[in-house]
Image (cartoon, rainbow, N blue to C red):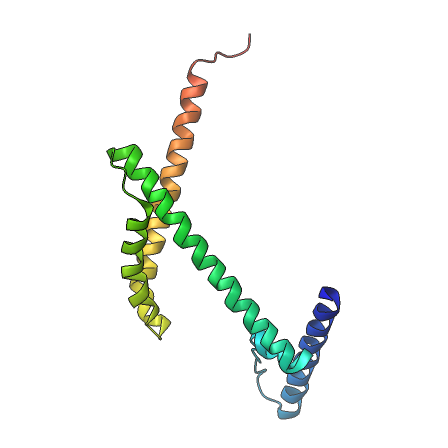
Length: 151
């Protein structure tokens, strides 16, 4: 079933690409790119049922990612506050604080208004990466400190 559906989607993509190329040749203009979304491509390949299945799949995948995030982050924050500060704060408190920020942010319809939060996220990711690399290199240096060169 998967291979058949994949074949139909690829055939539809090839057909739509060749249609766009032929239309551009007839017009003798710059090539215009036709961008198809996954649901649109599934509709053209498999009809309304294909479009519906793809939309449901995308919604389930996004929901799964969000749920994983809402479980993973509060649990890590609980562990960090317990190990660094000695406070045993329940993970549900962190989840409530996260939701207080994330629910209003989900109401934003224009993604261009999220550039400030995207910049903050990129800075925090960079900080986390540099911190992890710093710990890794410091542990590597400490473990190699007791070793001597082979004689």
